[in-house]
Length: 140
Image (cartoon, rainbow, N blue to C red; front, side):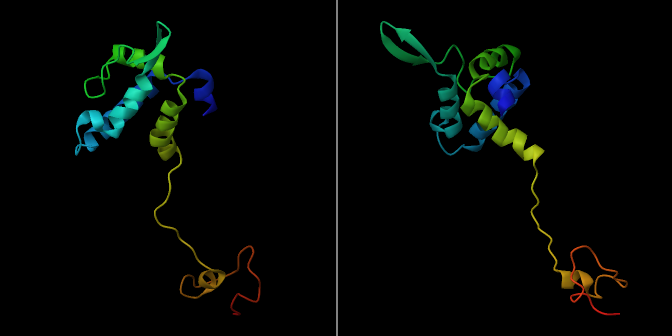
């Protein structure tokens, strides 16, 4: 997180984020494209505030909408300028791509008590193991 806050996102990170958003847009097919969560998120991230005659206006910064943009080098370079240090963008990328691959979780959890491990059903010979009180182990 600190690396993104300090240096910003790199072009491959921005490209992966764009591809994740495009996948989300395709997955949310029940509503019109411009009402989908991925589309609105993209529009919010690419909105650029511009000062015009004392009024603040938000514009897209010359970026095509999510349903039209392609992950070519020009678009990725433009998005990198806009997104490099935007906290919501790199949090989305970290949460959706980096953390799941770097910190996988197990679906099943194995557990056993000392009595289970010391029972004759698992092993023929039981010598003991660390942390086991001697009164729990069966006598041989």
